[in-house]
Image (tube, rainbow, N blue to C red; front, side, top):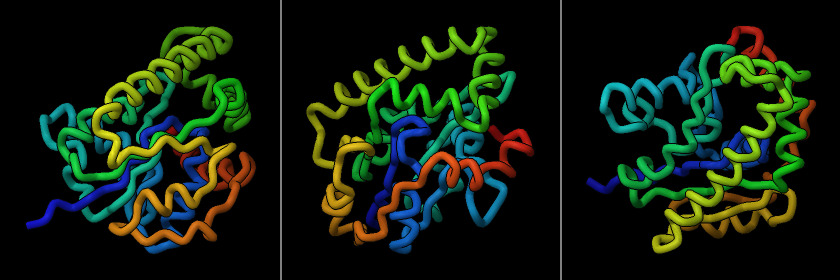
Amino acid sequence: MTEKRFIFVIGFNRCGLTSIHMMLRGNGIRCVQYQADDSNTVLGTAIAANLSAGRPLMAGLQRYSAFLDMSIVTPEFVFEGCRLFWQMHAEYPNSYFILNTRPIENWIDSRALYLDGLYAERYADAFGYDEVKIQQVWRKQYLAHLSDVRAHFAEDSGKFLEFNIEEDDPVLIADFLYPDFNVDPADWGHWNATDFDALVAEEAELGHK
């Protein structure tokens, strides 16, 4: 049986995940961005549970093809599932990996303002820091993640794409995924912070983020 090829979007949230998600979904690709549309499955929770149980990271999620925003952020706990990119690559070596990026200070500003500051507050509470210190943590996390991902895929770049969501053309994603996935870049759109907050407001109220 041919191994199913997944699409793993392995950058942090607030780096254009919704724009990528909407383009993929608009082309008929079954995606999970943070929480599945057709169930209560929270992606980061499912991945963390599989990791703890020693199962493949995508166990129970094989009906989907693309995975975005693998995080869990509560006042007690933070899990950044994208940091497990190396294990995803080991378990699903023929899959596609997209590192979504943006200028680091723009990313930090976006995170700081996300959900009117509630996201930063929860992140800071989980670490026991104030919100100024947590931005320093984010900066170190971001730079370390980019360095680690680039180093990991340096010798196996055939299924790896780094995509700057503020500068790059979405045709790069379409070309990268072809022929396993047919994506029309015309479905790309820039979903701003207000649009995204509307999509996740109910999740925030439920305490998922």
